[in-house]
Picture 1 (cartoon, rainbow, N blue to C red):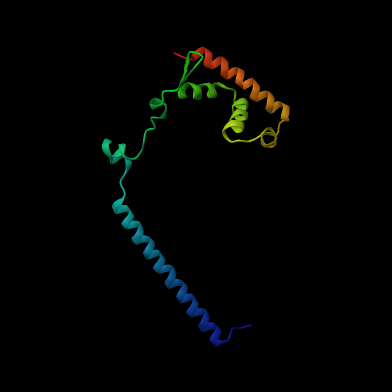
Picture 2 (picture 1 turned 90 degrees about the vertical axis):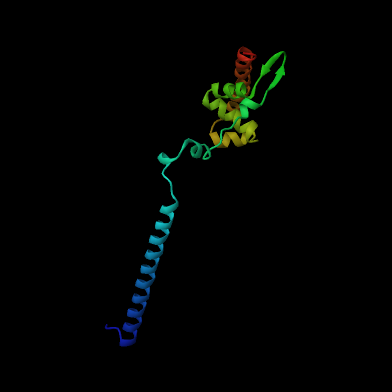
Length: 139
C-alpha cells in the first residue's frame, strides 16, 4: 500500500518539525552547558577559605557537657561509643526499639527473628551498655 499524497506531506511536515525541535533543544543544551561552565569552579582550585565555606563541622559532642549518674560523668560521646561497641544485631534491636519507636512485633517482622530473640537482644544490650559505661565513665 502506498500512502496518498496528503499523508506523505503530513509525514514530511511532521519530520521537519521534529528535526527543528531536536536541533533547537541541542542548541539550548549547548548554551546552558556553556553558561554553567563559566560559573563552575574546580575543587582543586579553591582556596582554603573557599573550601571552608563548603562544609560545616558539627561540634555537638564537644559543646554538650553530659550528665552525672551515681557519681559518674556520662557524655554524649561516651554514649555513642557504648552503642558502637555493641554487636551489630544488638545495636540494631536497641536502635529500632528506642530511636525509631518500633515494638518487638515490628522488629520481629523487620529482622525476621523470633520475638523472644528481640527481647533477649534488647535486655542483654543493657547489661553490656551498663558495663561499658561503668568502666569508662569519668575518664
